[in-house]
Image (cartoon, rainbow, N blue to C red; front, side, top):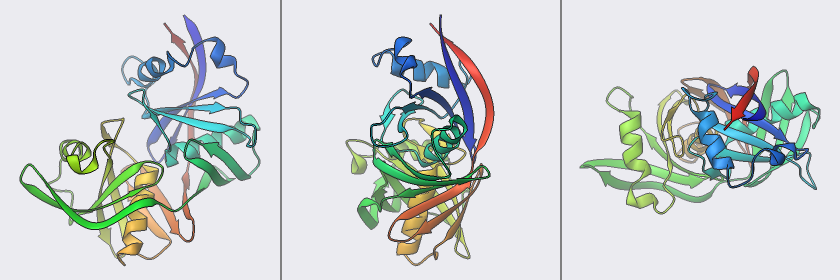
Length: 267
């Protein structure tokens, strides 16, 4: 058995296992080929430590660290904003960063500000924006919006969640031909006096998560473009509250919480 040291952190209910590989020591235990298998096993909520994903902090030439994010199915994603906020909290604890700076992600540099377990991350404006289009799934017509914040997001405004099965409807939309070949994360959003409540079906997790940072930011961005909300936008999720600020760049702010340190024995 090979010991993998990690810490578990959550950001508004979005939970992650973070591994420090800045010194390269993890490479002596696992190879790149076995990493997806490790991620799937560690993320399992019954047979592993349990999480929505795994984050590996790697060394970087020009930044304090590089964040590599893996969905719980073992696939790598370019960005996870709640994960990014948790990575900042962990890096601060390790002494890799000060309160303010930038780190590297697969989607590019990410600015951050950290204070009292509240983390704000700065994100470049979205790409591939498409507003107010329609598609049909199982005879149900959806009016939707789409953008990419490192990862793809479909945003659908609804009157209520009462008749929506997030997992079933989210899976149908996530795999719809409209979003081929990569699929999409799916955000169902209600609005009340400019305040948003966002529920997200996450690609790679293949289920609803308690919170999705990039989903919240995507919803807030679309809401400001459609004149539904004004920035900054207060966004509630099942796991807690985040604040999205839409300017020339985008900012997402919310708490992070350390849960436990652990050792996973990889077979």
